[in-house]
Image (cartoon, rainbow, N blue to C red):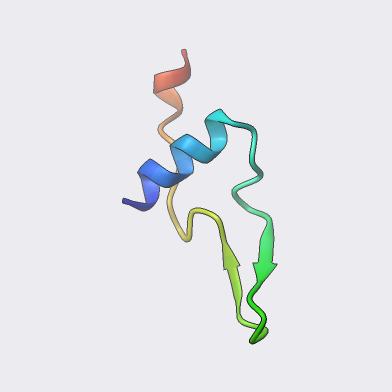
Length: 42
């Protein structure tokens, strides 16, 4: 599932490596540890 989210995020131009923080201070990234399927963009 994380790869799917990473692929969609990449397709709309989001930086999937950017670290955000929840109000509690916990860090997270948009796609967790997912990697975009770049072959879909060729």
